[in-house]
Image (cartoon, rainbow, N blue to C red; front, top):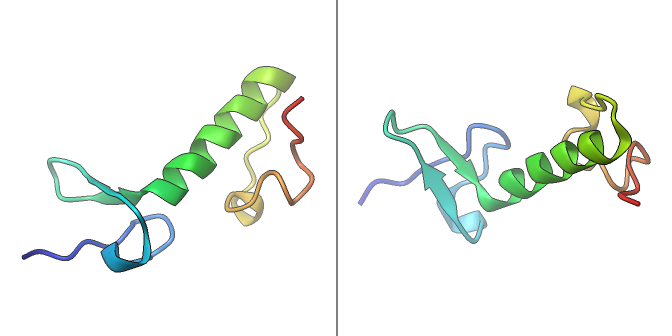
Length: 68
């Protein structure tokens, strides 16, 4: 059985609930998908681009978005 690692956070398959694997065998975990969804939602709601690599893993608690 192949074991996958998230290309965003480097967590292994056993450390997360779900791993989404593309046709080219690249993978992203459910936690990073959730973080990406939060970033996109904040950008849509606030009409601004908030992406900062250092804050990417915790956009809510970092204070860059409160999703209101």
